[in-house]
Structures are given as C-alpha cells and as structure tokens.
Length: 318
Length: 268
Image (cartoon, rainbow over all chains, first blue to last red; front, side, top):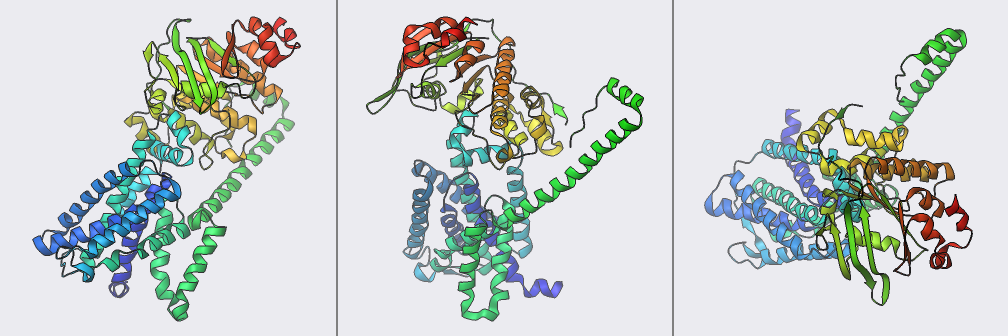
C-alpha cells in the first residue's frame, strides 16, 4: 500500500483535482445551467495561488482561499451578465469567458509570466490536504442533493416554471450555482498549481473543458458520485491504456460516444437503475408471501378471520 | 411513516370575504388578445369556475393570476394588495398553489418526493433536518397523500403511474403546501368518470373546510356540480357570470360553447 501510494502520488492527486474540476461543471448542470465558467475559475484559482505564493509567500490555505473568493465574486458577476442566456448559448458564452481568461494569462506580462507562465510556487500543500478538502466538498454536495434542497434544485432543472410556482426563486438559485461553480473550479486550480509548483496558459486551456465534460458524461451528470466515478476512470485509464499507444485518444472517443448515445445517465445511472430493480424485486416477494399466509390462515379458521376483522386494522405497506 | 408537525396553516377568514381579485386583466401576444379585460373576484371558502371553449383564454388568465404570464394591462390583488409586480415565486409563500393543464411531475423523483416538493417552501430548518436524517414526512405531506389517496404509489416514479393517478399526485403536491387558495387547471382532464367524481368530491370537501379555489374545466357537468359561481369566457372576454345554473342556461354561453343539451345538466 505504502509503495503504491508513493509511486502513484501524481495520479492520486490528479484524481481529486479533476474530480473538483468536473464538479464545477456538474453543479450548474444539476440546476439545468449549461455553464463552463468553472473551467475559467480554475484558471483564476491557479494563477491567484501562484502569484500569491511566489510574490508574498503566503500559506497555501490563504493562496487557495483568495482564488476561491475571487472566482466566486467573478462567478456572481458573470451570472448577472449572462442571466438571460440558456442552453447552448450559455455554454458558448461561458467557454468564451474561459478562453478570454487564457488570453489574459498569456498577455499578463510579469504578473502572469506570459506564455511561459509562472514557476516556483513552492508550498506545504500535501496529497492528504487535497483529499481532506475534497472530502469536505463531497459531503456538502452530497447533502445538497438530498432532502428539500435537492428536490428544489431538481425542479429548477426539470421545470423552472413549475419551480417558480412552488415558491423557488429560480433566478437566485442560478446565481448561486455560478458562485459555487466558481469556488469549486478555483479550488481545483489553486491546489493543482501548488502541487505542481507551476502554471502556464497551456495548463489552464480548452482541454480542461473536454476533460471535465468527459468525466461527467461517462460517470453520470446528476450526482457527485457520477463525477467521482468518471474522475477515477479518466485519471487512471491512460496508465492502463499505455499498451495501445497512440490509439489512446481513439479509445477515449469511443468510450465517450458510447456513453453519450447509449447510457445518458452515465455509469452511475446504470448502477442506480440496477439497484432500484434489485430492491423492488426483493420487496415484492415477501409482500406476496404475506398475503398468501393470511389467506391460508383464514381458510383454516373462520373464527380467527372474524376476530381479525373486528380488531383495529394495522396498516401493512409493501 | 413518522410525521412531524410544521407551521404554515393559517386561520381561514370567514366564508365570502374577498381573497383575490383581478381588475381589467389583459394579456396580449402581439395582435392576439388572449385575455382582454377580465374582472373576477375569488371569495374565501368558495369555488369559482372558469368556463369556456378551447382557446378562450382560461389558462392564460390563470397564468396571469399566478404571475407566470406577464400582464399587458390591469391589476391583480391579493387581500386587497396589488401584486402585479410581485415575483411569481413569492406567491407560493403567500399561500397560492396551482396545478397545470398538463402533468408536470419531476420524472426522476418518487411520488413521495414529488408531493414533498409542494411542502418544501414551508419547511423550517428543524423539519428539514428531521427529514434529511430521520426521513420523517411532515404532517401536511402525510395529510395531502391521505386525502388524494396516493398512498399506495409513493415509491413509484411518475412514469409508472396511470394518467389519473399522476393528476391526483399533482393535486397532492399543491395541497402539501397548505395553500389558502388553490387553482386547478383542468384537474380531471384525461380521467375516467369514477375518478372525476372522486376528484370533484375531494374539491367540495376541501371547499367545505375553507379552501378557496379557482377551477378551470371543460367538464360542464362537473363545473355545475362543484362550483359556487361560474364565469364564462369566450375569445378572452367575459361572457357571463353568476350561479352555475344560470350561467350554463345563458343564451350567449350556450351559443359560444355549450349547446342546448346542457339545459338538462343545469336542471338536475
């Protein structure tokens, strides 16, 4: 275990960071908001952490926290700006936001290090920290998927007008989603920069959009668990697929295409469906048995049947 | 199923008090006057029915009253206060619940969760936690389930329900918020006769308990049996209003929509 842990540090770190990155797309998607702003926030977090660490030598928690805060504010402003957009148009607008930040980083002069980026962002951030932060995020997101909050977010996604008629302030939910998405993306970006000690426009480019989308399409877009499954698969698949060499991208493409066409709920959707069927089968059988038993008893003893009818009925739910 | 009490139920005003009013409400889409100058008054503890042929503007009027459709002209008043500029999502908090012309249940949630959605706006933090941790169902939800008789299908998804049952789940969702005013847009469309009778009986029982209702329906017999007052519309305009029997006998209404045979329905 220990040697495995040490020799796979980079992959373990990447798993959690790409999970947070994917969640920055998944959270808006769950509320029906097709936004890639989380990827731009990744860049904001990455550069903020690098600049603060190199220039001011602040603690990692401050460097990452500042990026998270900044990206949350930017997310809120962006939400106001694109309030009237939805669907593909919103997707395009937020992708251009991401590309715009890339251009900003390339032309940021000394502050962002231009096309070569920034180096030497040394910090004390460890893999354990990353895991701890991710777990906290996952617990919060898992809670947000349950109970009244989860239901209302579902309503915002599936039928915004219905949600409004049920008292949900849909506009506010959408704004908040941009803020959360920004914070998640920036958190991933900041941690990645501090682990790798470097950031460049290349590392925060368009390929992250593809990565994040791939993870949630294959894993399942409607829950954090889907993103977790996807993050594990797409971080570890390349090392497993080494033997196919240059054909790797083709295998990727096929996996994504199959998932998008045949498994719209992702792997998680498949698992949930299977689980539901199993549970239902398990429950139906004893219920039928119970009915048969009472019938048999009634046939044997009519007096007992009368007594049972007279007694207060106890409700039996299958 | 454990239940928890929660606040939300408010004391009903005496029967016959004006709860909701529209004044000269109009909704125009370009040149089309979907609703054109409707005045109506909803009195507490009574059922007002809106009658009219397809495309007469009934559903648009309901949309305007619930603020989902913007008003071109006119005002809407709740307890005498103008809410023409209040966001639609606030209305649910002020005790107005509605159903829609088509079934609008969330496909990925169970029936229970769909009903709970109707009560969520009134959940305080404590009951929210109770529900999350102990899976307790709040009293209004349990009551709404019981009244609409959907207790047997709580674990199913909307896609597995018959049309009539799905519509009853929608009524349950609307009731779960313990509204003061319930607006139903063709609640029995697609139901069979026994189901219609059952729903009509439920609405009357709710009325007798003080729930104010606005009912949009095609089924004239049901309207005559259920409503305290009727308002007939045609092409967005007010045609007749009054006691159900009088309205369905009104020559203008008959010409617009009903046909002579509804004389008999009114006489029963």
